[in-house]
Image (tube, rainbow, N blue to C red; front, side, top):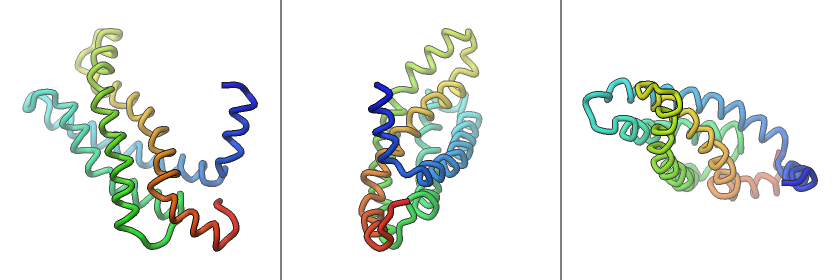
Length: 160
């Protein structure tokens, strides 16, 4: 990507919205990773591929927490709770699927590179979560909360 094209992309993203997304994202990441790690710890040795089950269970809990943070603080939309939550669920379903595809090779690779298979699911989970954060921002911005943002922009004349 050239410097010009990256500046062009940055012009289309409201800085205040990106800043709010990063703040809410930090909370979501800490909360999400905490629930993932907790489930890995609770399920390890009891369930085959515990890190995959942990990822799925943690994702289901974290979707609603993330949704509310994005709705209230990042995209600041009003009403449409069910519709936006369902759209959010669709974006996260894609993200969950991506995580389930990326986690096994990431766990293997981290375990192979570090020689520590026991900590590999934790490190790989954090790495995959980073990819999911970027993908989710654009999904939420363009799909989950798009209709509410357009309505808000019409009222205020601005999307920030």
